[in-house]
Image 1 (tube, rainbow, N blue to C red):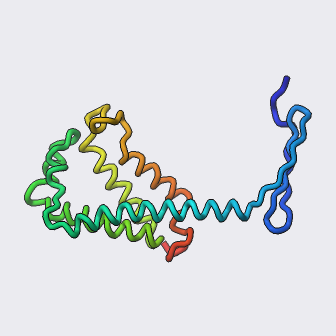
Image 2 (image 1 turned 30 degrees about the vertical axis):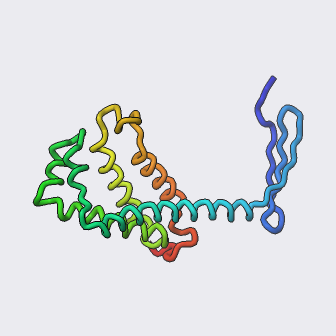
Image 3 (image 1 turned 90 degrees about the vertical axis):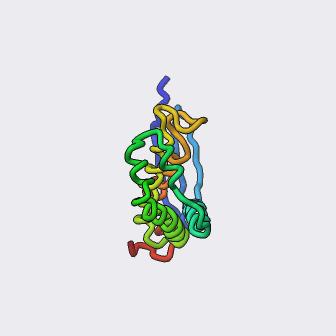
Length: 179
């Protein structure tokens, strides 16, 4: 018996409704979908995801800015992958600018995500930063104590990539298509 769909027809009706006709194995199904409400729900989900990521990164950055004792030095000196590079970044001559980029980069990129302003630049910066955060805890194939190849940094990179792909900065953001 052939399980292929034999006939599919879609028609757009007034007010954004979509009517579908599907014939499969002699069974005809008809359905109606409100395209406009799906689009609003989709936009709301994208907007909330963008703002949630923005808040997470903004908060991570601003707590570092407000804490004068914070330093990335310990994290960098304990790197399991590319230890030489990360030790160099954590050295006395470099730790000042590395801390600055971490503190203010997270804070400003988080604010940019929240506002939808300069979204692409913020996402590319954050994806790069998350990759740089991933490498020091990678002791191939383990990441930290409880992960195998994938940890939260990789999930952040992938999720930010999805937000970039769906152009989340254009959904109820200040810049719309400016950047």
